[in-house]
Length: 265
Image 1 (cartoon, rainbow, N blue to C red):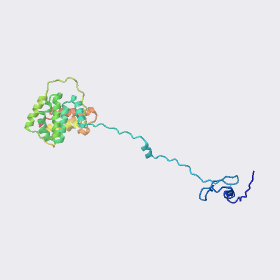
Image 2: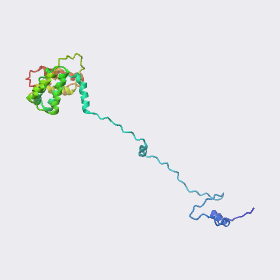
Image 3: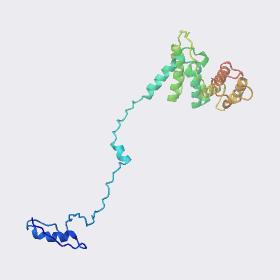
Image 4: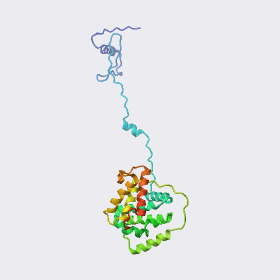
């Protein structure tokens, strides 16, 4: 065994000193690390270990947008196309079994609001072929009367003498002798129904849109029904019983002419 001793300066670079002594024993084919290459750190008991601080890998957090994109796309919900005309027809059929003279009066009130009292006085008798009270209380006749009024409102037609004859004949053909004995459910009365009833009163007893008779008779009808404190529609209680009471009183005054007014409708 051969023992070789090297003398190293502890103040200098131990590795370089050691490699310098060892290089005498290394073959030429062995390439020593260049200055620009990272030296291999040799750890000896008397040399400090130099290490470069390494930063821990940061865990990337997905943004809300990335997470949202990663979620499975929800299939769009296809909404069925609803035909408004079909809905209207179905609603009309559902209500057709409970038609009364009140429904005709409501239609007259809507016509009066749209075209005025003068037009209603002129055209409604032509459309209905006579007073509302003379329409038989059966489904075909009431439905035909309401249809005529609604058609006139939709088309804004002007009724002529020829129309009068044809309309009267059509309504007469629609009148039947069937007696409906089954009880009908009570109609729910709304504020609009009460207002339409008063407009129908005006169409029957007022000569023009000034509604001179209605402005006098309407408050008196309400006072006789509810007492002196209720003299306008806005003062009528909004419960169903009170609305029906006002509605029935106005219709009764219209049908029976409480104040002996001249009938113009």
